[in-house]
Length: 88
Image (cartoon, rainbow, N blue to C red; front, side, top):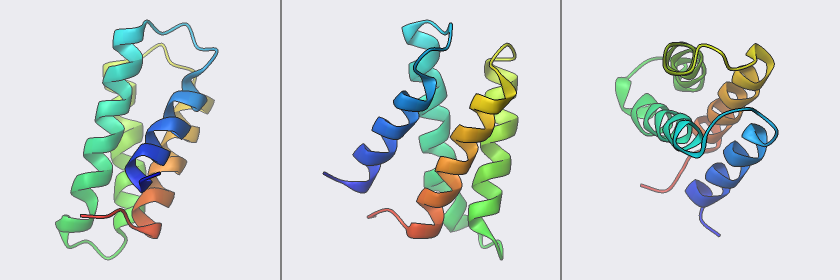
């Protein structure tokens, strides 16, 4: 199983039980994947933290009604994905 697929599975698991529609869940996962993909190339000293902050902001804007705890879980998963590294 690829690292990106593993991230997808974990993101969808974190979204289980939310009242989001399937399209909203897909949108959230796409936003998370984008943040994870972009963060390493930004040249920032802490790309994991950058991904985490980006996910918080992007998801809060895209799905304002999402429980902040779920949003934090998603952001943490993305931070870990960046720190551990995903295949190019």
